[in-house]
Image (tube, rainbow, N blue to C red; front, side):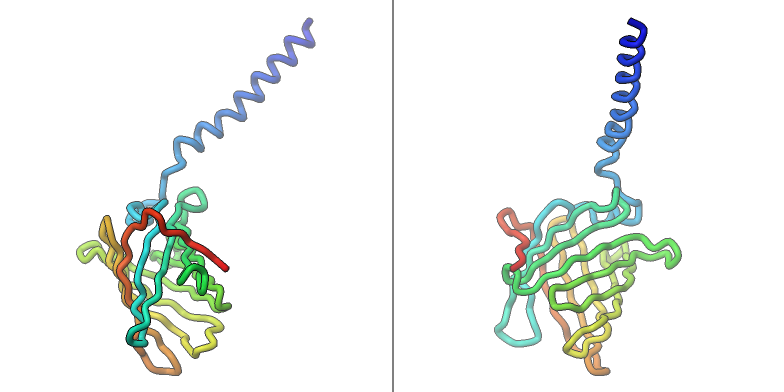
Length: 184
């Protein structure tokens, strides 16, 4: 009988010790690093944007999904253009040593970028600068400005291509109830 009681007590203790971390995880499942709170209105939604490219008359549709990642210490953004013709994945985080938002962006085209961004609360804007690695079109840097509002995101960019700054893409994103991020 003593063995049975001991076994039962061990089972109760084990079950309780396993349940505590699960309860803690459930209560912190929506926490974000304070520096990432600016992105909260965009989380767990698909956003649709019409990319106005440098070529007149050519518009591409971009869908992006923003998610909390790495226990709230990062934001993960996946996106696809024209249902998977092109896409990428970003991780945005607070870089303590740079005292700045930082990010990495990996693409289906084989290049990647890394950069930093600063949030201007007065303008509700993010100003970003990133270095581009392995771009076959000669783009080595990108500068962009994004304006964040609760129901939309507008972006515009310029590229350093073959040593000259050229106009990049621009878009306005709104929440899409039926949009999906797709890859080929």
